[in-house]
Length: 98
Image 1 (cartoon, one colour):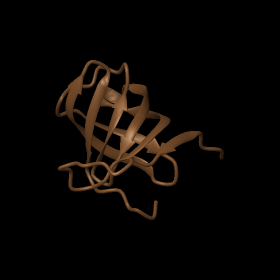
Image 2 (cartoon, rainbow, N blue to C red):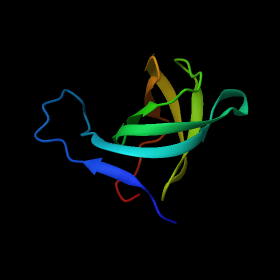
Image 3 (cartoon, rainbow, N blue to C red):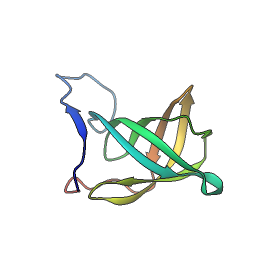
Image 4 (cartoon, one colour):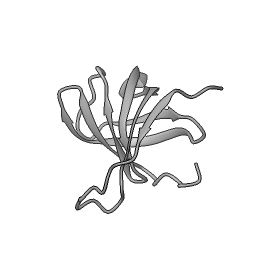
């Protein structure tokens, strides 16, 4: 299976985040509340969470799953939204080996 993704290394980012985020552009499909299927573009990713862009009507607190290559169904919860951008926290941290 081919995975189309564009990865960028952040150049010496200064951040208060615990984990370094990897910037990327990866299109995935997910399942949200009420079994709503949706498409999402991942913009950045860390072991603890991600930033996605989606037209799905996700709200703070909603749980959902995205099908991530080499990791399978990854469960997350919406931490914040701003228009079509959604900040998400993973239910379980992602493995660096995945």
